[in-house]
Image (cartoon, rainbow, N blue to C red; front, side, top):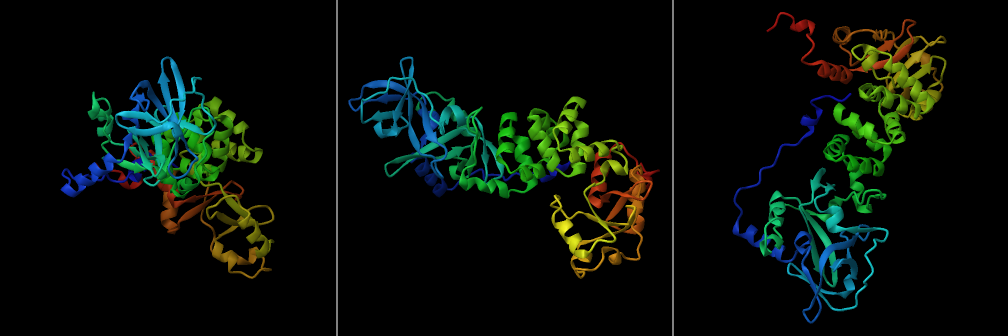
Length: 447
């Protein structure tokens, strides 16, 4: 269950940059700057022939995102009169902050048309949101830097500093000189590409899938609406669902309402049932009904039943993922059922009699340490499971957990049939949600 304080708790403390830099650092920055060409500074600069004649001006830089760790520059878009023409990089003799010099005067006077896989550095990436995979953060490109290695030009870095943004609005040559104060290596960057076109993760950026759910939640919350949808589409659905469980409720509500119904329904289906129900409760009736209709029948039925419970009562914040074992089942059959469960977390394992009434709740050790042909019913302990009804309020749940010094309770209906389990963290989440509007019994009389 998401809480209103989760995001602030996830944020790492800011790292202060030293106010002064050493002479060695200053010299290193100057050397770095001298080897880079600013994309922002290159736009509108003159394009000249070998004889020095100006034939047009730079309009954009064409790269291919899938051309390696560092995208190769495939050419330039040049403004010639009213036309935007493509100039292959093989026709370029030099690129600098002063402009572009060509080694060929052969021009393609047709209007520039993108080919599949091509991106424009200025139009598609400058001032756009990008993912810094290594830093697990969203950045906005204040500038992009090119460099020449051997005979090939590459896009090698993105500048994310506010100083570089200010530098771009300065008049004259000062605004075209790179100031690499906060530069991110391009090999760790993921772009969202062009609106309306599919975006695929580059091979080297599979590190995105290694981020913790809370880190991904931070990234998603920091993105714009279009970028959010792109990220959800390129993430593994299970990874995306885990991240959504960590999001703030208002951010999650906005994301689900903006997503295609089928995508939203699929993500909700993969979330923990109690987390999915919390999200569904926040949605308008029309959106909630549409998403439920798009879900598999079993999931829809389960979530619809949970929605019937009051969110302030046990049934409203319990975890409904259960492994129900009959007392007559063997340990071998129980193991297969546990391993086949969709839930990737350790589920609640309960034992029931022939009529489905609760006999005991077990842990994994009880099952996997037993002999294969042992009946599950014989594993039950003498201790009676601690239970609570679905209409129990939060105070009652807390009291039972405290009195029995347990980490969980089994929620049962009026016939003692198991409905779900309340874990200690479910209680904490429920308490945080009600903080400020609820008075606990032990707080009565305190100022």
